[in-house]
Image (cartoon, rainbow, N blue to C red):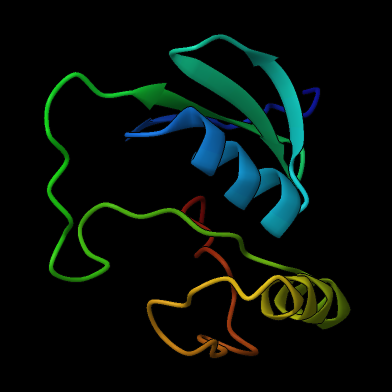
Length: 110
C-alpha cells in the first residue's frame, strides 16, 4: 500500500495567528488558504485550520482534544524542540519523553 496521509481539521479564531504559529513557529509548509481556512503540511500530514463560527472555550487540560507527533529519531524531536524554544512558543507543559523504548502499537494479528 502506498503511504496514506493523515488529515485533521481543527477550529481556530484567527487564521493569521494560526499560520504564524504553525509556519514560523513549527516550520509547517503553508498550502492553500482562504480567509476562513489554511492548509498546513505537518511532517507530511495535512492539518487544516478552519475559522469557527462559535466561541471556542479553552480546554482545562490536554485531554480529550489534542494531537501531536511521534518521532522515530530523537534528533528530529530535538530539532523541533529547539525551533519552538528559539521562536518562544508557549508550552502548555514542559517538554518530556513518554513511553521511551516501548512499541508504538501492539501486533493485533498474533
